[in-house]
Image (tube, rainbow, N blue to C red; front, side, top):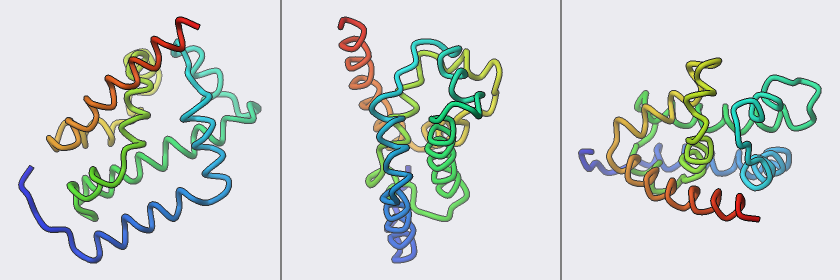
Length: 147
């Protein structure tokens, strides 16, 4: 990735993305998706994702679409990729969290987390952050499975 200085406008976008993450419902959604939701299979994922009666369905959709929107901003040049990668790890965490079932999820939903995937493929800093996160998530998944 070619090194470019971020602009004040980039910084404003990063701060706004952070501010949106602190909204009360978004915090609850992020806490559940990030901490409590560890599906072992695509069927377990879809049991929430496709079920509008599941109370966690809106949280899952909110968190996933938030991070896809943020990745799209980078891909379309609205915010510096370097600054985004330096300031945001949760989208990479989610991608890593679902990596073991990603192919099965995409059998039903081929565009699932495509923007985050493209971000990782396009920018080496994003790929490095993802790979480091993937190792931590795999260790966590192994620990959870052993319990």
